[in-house]
Image (cartoon, rainbow, N blue to C red; front, side, top):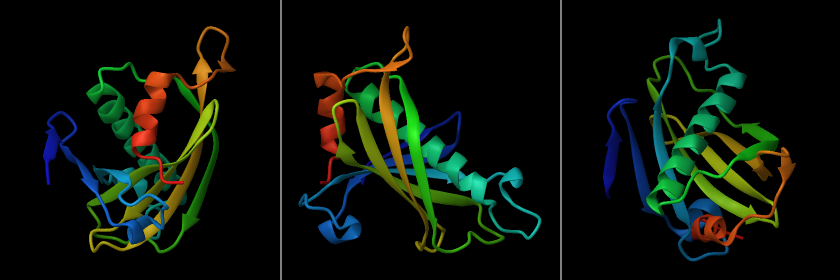
Length: 163
């Protein structure tokens, strides 16, 4: 397994292939982008658990890592996107003592101007604590209007497409 460490942020980003059953995909081996993100003191609520809003911030950080790694690796600029919809299924709490989470990001749907990612948030024991589905829309920055996904962007996105 290749590991690349981003020194400034001090967390690992790993690219790996997983078995079909791991994500219930229709592709034999979907591309999964893995990020390890340290938890911050402010992520915890007064009960010692990770606050529900922090899951969204952690998922966003993992999507930024995915975008930087995947589009940057292909020599592309990172496309401007707006989040249109985000859904979080909270499956189990991240409890006190957790110092980092692993977040796997995979592209699950690609449309004409939007795409969907699914992210599983894992605790240090490897349990899925939350699943985050995010619809992102490609944007033309000068007009702030949706635009069609380009062929270059599609090449990167289809690498992780599972449905």
